[in-house]
Image (cartoon, rainbow, N blue to C red; front, side, top):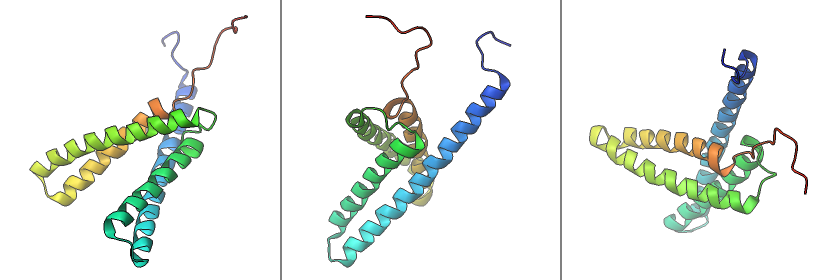
Length: 149
């Protein structure tokens, strides 16, 4: 066994913890989808135009996603909220751009419905990794004595 490699029980805990995080991320995604749909449909019932209702629905889902991912999924509530919000928005935009490329690729090889599903899988996977490693990255813990000033 490598000298600095985590022990087998520790690796198992890491995998279980990451699996729980992925499940939570998926639950937040389902909740975002429902919220987006409900806001959209509710605004349509109130006479709002389709594009405005669509924008409002996505805005509600985006805010909901940020709050739940920050506090519950990645447990990064102690970090700088504004920095995390900017990084979160940047990640969503970047992942959406990659999703568009994936969608175009899949569309050349299958129908629009399957291409949409493929694009959603690409977006979701990339967005999870981005949020885990960038937007809600936990600060490294100091392992040695703290420097004295």
